[in-house]
Image (cartoon, rainbow, N blue to C red; front, side, top):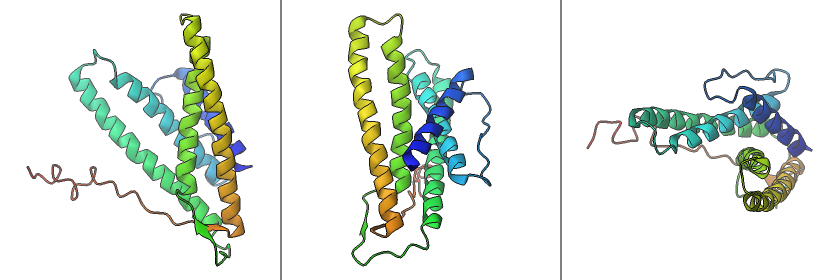
Length: 202
């Protein structure tokens, strides 16, 4: 199933990042895009999410230097754009993969594209990783660990449900029971022409 492959790649990306555990480390994709394009995209997607998770932790430091915080905010903005672009590349992969499918007359559209559901699955992998750490943290209270175990179990159930939903959606698209229609995100605040501040207007 597709979700099993995706979840394995996400765990691999997180584990690899955590070896050095720094946002400054270079990125090397383990998967050759010419040999396995979707694996290449999934690994990159989760790496982006993992780095951004660290950015979000750092910027919440109440003692962070304001200049450093502004610099980091710019990195988060760039990361968000990279994340969106990668999600759209993943949807492009599926559009191409299923381009020859004969869509049934009564086929329906899904509320979100496959890639945006996969985006949530990648974030969920990070939540599970970090929640698990809280259940074994040595300096945490037993009450805290018990609470985190309950939360972890919910996250694991959520991953199971989301994985099933993604596999079902891809199967429906492959069978022509649903069809893909992808809308570009068209984020306006990064665009020199669409953001009035970047245009120089007050």
